[in-house]
Length: 424
Image 1 (cartoon, rainbow, N blue to C red):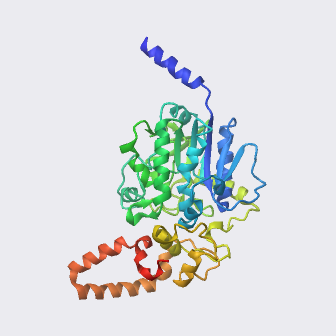
Image 2 (cartoon, helix red, strand yellow):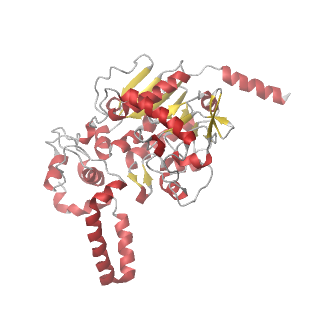
Image 3 (cartoon, rainbow, N blue to C red):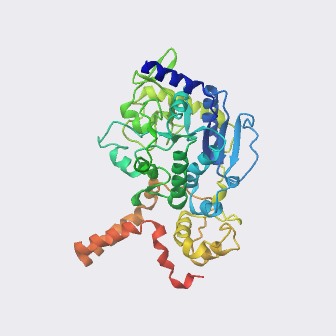
């Protein structure tokens, strides 16, 4: 009797109409990837509308289907103090840090919303996730569920740096707990959503590692067909049957997260991993080559080197990464009353010019760990200098000095460099 009642309840839940939708967020240069995601999602969810937030200056995008795709511009979302955040955060940080705000905004119209990173492709319907969201406040996927420490990257050490959950995907449903969660998460992202792993910060992602301590009615999805990516390939094998793709012979492949993907070299799997040599995972490579072809089609005639609008003052001068961090560190003390930090006639630009924080670049560079190879001679000199310091101060004081340097490795912690004379 009780079993039949539960079955009927489940059938009632399935029949109850729900307003469901999906979302991605990207800047203009990522639009080809976003269009692959959107097309693949709508192929499997033809009854839905897909939402895309574009983190850039508003412009005309004629090739997006305005009937099935709802375009939102980040400047028009109503984020309080938006220009300060647009100046404070770089393109990756801002794209990720507005995520919880947008999810909360969409929940005013929909019952359930899935967020998907733009570099994802859908292979099966995600109806089971929407069904789970009828009884859960929000759903998450872990980076992987099988521990690994084989000396290759990524592994458990990277998990400590970037978080147990991958926030390239999250599903949320309308309820009081989700409101509390999104408000808490959005506040943390907008105030401290920096990519500074040395200080335990990884944009929006690390914060959600605290969610299990604060919220109870969410669910961790352990379906290995969800969010397949280079960080979990060690536990997932892909095969094909008459209906499509299968993971580990037990679950359908729902979507792949092609993070760190090089479309010119799909056999490499991802640029941020060294566990699988190029060509060593033919099961994944077949799908990767198909994704590369999709990107090529979507990129045809599109300028993927489009400049990111929030990388520049209104006079066209580049806003470099160091200036962004100094601005963040000095914001409360010096810049909180500046309504538009991008104004080249206002205080932020004048401060940057006075302190020689303007660079001569015409395009904002993207700093990665590979950039370190460009300053190898400077690094060699620094190592010699550090060896001299160790000799002069001794091991105990040297240890404390290194702890201090770790603290100020974030430029935000170096606001005192400019002294009292700049407190205007």
